[in-house]
Length: 308
Image 1 (tube, rainbow, N blue to C red):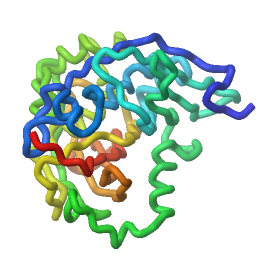
Image 2: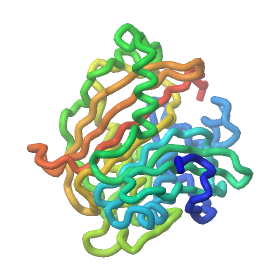
Image 3: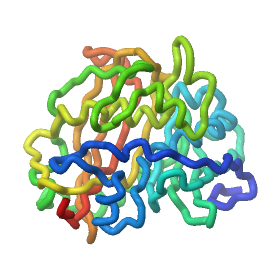
Image 4: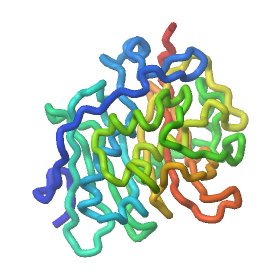
């Protein structure tokens, strides 16, 4: 039997109410982000959307049931965001069960109470031997259209495939009592109290970082970084279009130092946005000994620039 959304063999998660913990986020030159209700309304949203990768944690209990603890050691969640979710708006996640022995990839999705699709994608385990992921699909479609080499973006001037993040290599580490800065304006211990799904492994000695925090550990230093040759138009508002987080040598842990680097892997535009895909890699040392995890993230910039 082929897997697909609505397959009879489906695991259903609890109905959860995710918290908008980025309402006070400082972004760009204007000091506010899409997660602030006044900004969201000026670019056409009814409510401020929560941080998209917050939803990743909600899948973990189901994916541990499907793949066991391998999910924390070498799991991958590859997601296309479909519609925004507001503060404490109930959502439920779903996972197709494997239909054959040793299957390493399944389809996943999330809906609102009324059935509106929030996101969809794939979850995989292991470092290979599985099919095209959701983000693979999105990037391959973009590349098939061609023209990236000659595309000139107006809001993200100078953004080109191959641009490197400056500084080239940055040290990152998250401890329980760390304040994570203006991009993620909370103390990590407080964040733990607001997870949609908590697990014992997120606490105590040798604690594991929840999957949504892998996005955070790769981005929380971003206000001190930039892509070479890129100039962002003042006042633009950004949001995620898709995200894939893949663990190679995990789990990723609280209190452990890692080193990260980033590069641009695709650029494009739609009628309402300009966008770029970046790949951020997490290493176990500045010598790049072991690849620990990797993120491919689609950053959209709204063509509507609000007056704030």
